[in-house]
Image 1 (spheres, helix red, strand yellow):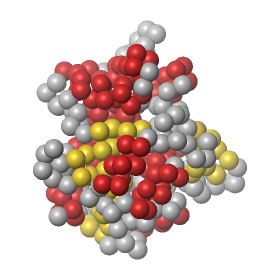
Image 2 (cartoon, helix red, strand yellow; image 1 turned 30 degrees about the vertical axis):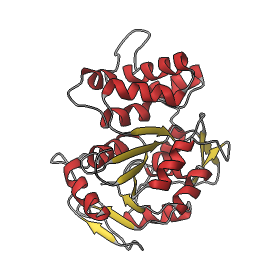
Image 3 (spheres, one colour; image 1 turned 90 degrees about the vertical axis):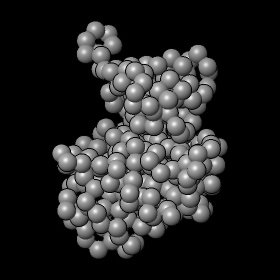
Length: 289
């Protein structure tokens, strides 16, 4: 195993991909625990057709941990523009096909990881598909990741079924972690979609690894409209997650008064659209020394 700390990253989508591109610069052991609650787009269609966990965020994480020079990494991100495959990413189809061939979704991810040259382990947050549930501002229940993301700020999220089975590999990774990086990403529909799983939330409470929350660079409309950094931390606390340190960029998102210690740095890429992996890696590496 390469030298370096054991790092676990939690979340989903493009945000978790940015974290993984950062952690691979300093970590010796990397595990990503990824939300599979997505019910939209290509992932939603494949999930509905084959009864598998949503593959899209898992694909993004495999590519983030993969060899940038391999054609498979670029191919996994190719999205068909027309015909019966319109909207599908090739990587989603490959993962779905491997799952059918192997009969084991985790084995399918491992095989997909070999194709792209992934350097870490990617584990779904749950063994089977789950439905995300939240209470909208008006008090009514909203179900489904896409619907929740459009509902505006919600009171909290949970999963259906309420206590889904998780992979032992996810629990093992959290048990051995030196550092646990949570986020960035859609707060309620990606980040909290993982910690809403009771077994993972309990494992987070037990881990000896230092828990670092990487805050988003800006509000995600309408999901976190009006949120500052402190509001993000309060949402995590309300879901039973106690953070050791917050990493943020107050030049792009107001700080407020978060309760944990804060590391405030310029973290955005030159275009300002996402976290710069090198800048984020420098901060995270300092925190795990």
